[in-house]
Length: 441
Image (cartoon, rainbow, N blue to C red; front, side):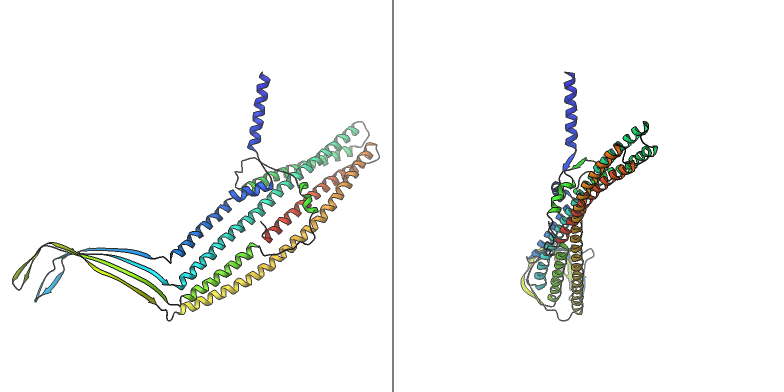
C-alpha cells in the first residue's frame, strides 16, 4: 500500500513537471508571437489610433454648434449725461446668451484631408504587417538557432562518449602493457577537451530559449522545449528549386515608401487647395438682458424715481454665408516647392532601396544554393567518416592501428555531423531572410 502511494506521488510530480514545461513547434511559436508579442499589440493600437484620426477628419464635414454666455456687473456705477447734467447710471449688470451654428459647404482642403487620413490608415496597416513579417522572421531564426544548439550538443555528447570509450580502451590496454602511455594520455586529453565545448553549447541552448521567450512574449522563467531537430527540415533542402521566381511586389519597405509618396502627393494637393475659395453657412441667435438698481435721477430739478428691475430680450436670429477668397499668400507657394523636393527625395530613396533589396535576394539565393551543395557533401562525409571510424576501431583492437588514427577518425565523425547540421541551419536562415525580403507571410 505504501509503495503504491509513493508511486502515485511520483507520477503526479512527473505530470506536474511535464505540464509546467511548454513544448512548442515552429508554427505554434509563431502563432503565440503574433498574438502575445508587445510589438504586435503596439501596432494594433496604432491602427486603432489612426482610425479615430480618420473619423475626426470625416467629422469636420458635420455642422458645429457653439454656445456663449456673458455676465458683467458694475462694481462702480457708470455715468451718463442727460439734459446738461452728469449723473450715475442705474444699470446694475449686463448679460447675454448666444448660439452659433456653422457648416462648411465648399472646403477643398478639408476634402483632401479626408483622403489623406485614408492613406494614414493604409500606412498603419502596412506597418502592422511589417511588424508581423519581422517578428515571424525573428521567431523562425530563433527557433532554428535552438535546434542547431540542441543538435550540436547531441553531436558533441556523442563525440564525448566515443572519446570516453577510446580512453577506457587505451587505459585498459596500457594497464596490461599492450599500448604506450602516450595513447592513454592523448585519449584522456581529447576526452577532457570536449567538456568546455559541451558546457558552452549547453549555455547557448539556454540563451537561445530565453531569446525566443522574449520574442513570443513569454515569461523567461517558464521552462520551454521545442519540437524536432534540423534533420527534419532536410526535405526543404532537397526540394529547393534552382531559380524560383522572385518579385518585390509584397515587400513591405517598398510599400511603405509608395504610401509615403502618395501622402506627399496628397499633402501637395492640400497645400494647393488653400488657394481656393471656401464657402460656409452660419447662423446666430442672441438673447440679452440687463438690470437696474433702485435710484432717484434728478432731471432739471425734477426727481424721477427708478425702480429696481431686470429685462431680457431677443437680439434676433441671423443666417448667412461666409465666402473666403485667398488672394496672395507667398508662404503657400514656398511650402508647395518644399513638398515637391521631399517627393523627389523619396523617389531617389525608393530606387536605392529597390537595388539593395534585389542584392539581398541575390545573396539569399546564392547562400541557399551553396548550402544545398554543403548538405549533400556533408551527408557523403558522414557516411565516409563513420566507415573510417569503424575500420580504425577494428585496426586498433587488433593492434594494427594507432590511437592517433582512431582519434582523427572520431573527430572526423563529429565534424561531419556538425557540418551537416550547420549547413541545414544556414539554408533555413537564408530562406527565412528571403521570405522577409519578399514580404511572404
